[in-house]
View 1 (cartoon, rainbow, N blue to C red):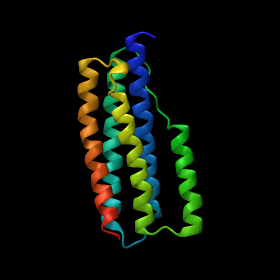
View 2 (view 1 turned 90 degrees about the vertical axis):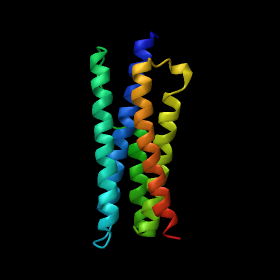
View 3 (view 1 turned 180 degrees about the horizontal axis):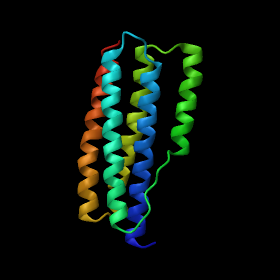
Length: 152
């Protein structure tokens, strides 16, 4: 596989997981109660961050002559279905929602770490873009973890 094709594949994977993150935070915000406006605002911010990430990645792919992804991953769809089942049996309290959000954040952190693997051969331009987004993703993960830990 040519380097540019491999890079486009890697960036498209990141678009999908950002789309998963958007859908996950939208779902989590919907599951929150009336008194959880603080969390809804955090979730909205992180969903918007991922919209911007996906947009930047799409632009980079299009500039390289590739076609950008627009959907979500199968694993993200399955994770949200699991959230629905879990909420049915355990309720949708702040702590359980934050625990599930942290699992999603763990997944996107791993995707960004994997994308930067030397095996992927990303160009310096792509690497710089991914590293910039990775920093924001890591900050989001840490915020969710802190919020989850405060619910103990």
